[in-house]
Length: 399
Image (tube, rainbow, N blue to C red; front, side, top):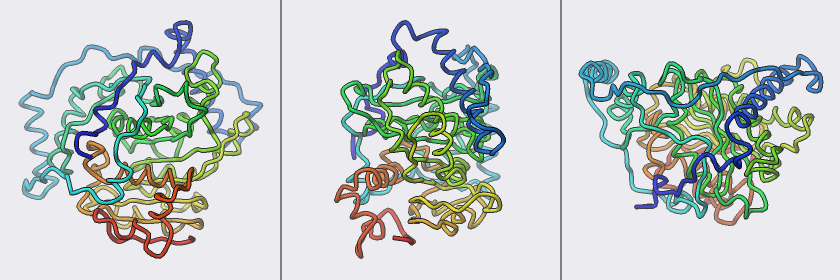
């Protein structure tokens, strides 16, 4: 990929999502409605009461903009805390080198930045709070990240930041497009959602509307329902740049860590809920990246739509074997691949430094377009998922 890294994608300011009349208090009202819709949808998912009987009274807290914060990144105590954690977690202070393997065929084919400029509802900022300054130091030292991640400044990065919310990352030229598929993206437990911004921009540059929901725990799926509801609100808002531009019949769920477990837990259960609310949602597939086991298969139904599970070779966060439970239980078409030399946090790195982003894009293209190049990755006797230099331990079933 070379210099075609997602950091070079042209970014349109967040205000472009809504015209002048729809900004400010109007947009805050839109967010409140979206969150209320998500809560209503979540209740329907639990099978408590009919969707049409649900009021939407929930008020999203105001003041979600960045506030002045202390830059802890150069603080001696932060350095000591970070170094101490690295020493303890690595059993003697052995640190990892930056993870940047030679790109395999899948990354070379699918991992480049796409043709679309990118617009966002929220720009990421440097993580300079105490928690995520240390978090980033651990990622760099133990998980081989090449660059420090960014933050959206939600709690606990800033104490006044709202810990629950959703952001939209989408093609800035969507007005010239007939429609765009929806990709619902979930972070993992305790991960600042801004850390996933670079991956979301990669997908948006390829023509996806990415709805990223978060609630700090990011477990079992409410954050993904919130993301879908936020996208639905933008799609129906006549003042939105996304008005009638999101194709809910081409929806994919993508999650990392606990977010991957959440995606498998939800499966296609949102479809009937959003269809009752007037949306033609069809979840085409799930991508679970280094997934946590969610409920360990005790409550949820096995995934019956196409599933891709990518696991880290050096997994040290998810309990042993927990990242493979979803694949083992899947009753529909499913693929499993281990990303050689990777760590649990590798997905948070620059998108051009590992295979995760290209796996998401190749699987999405396979499900939505069935292009010959994507089909060759997942089907046939010599499918390239099994021969890619960055992957090993590949399995598939139900094909």
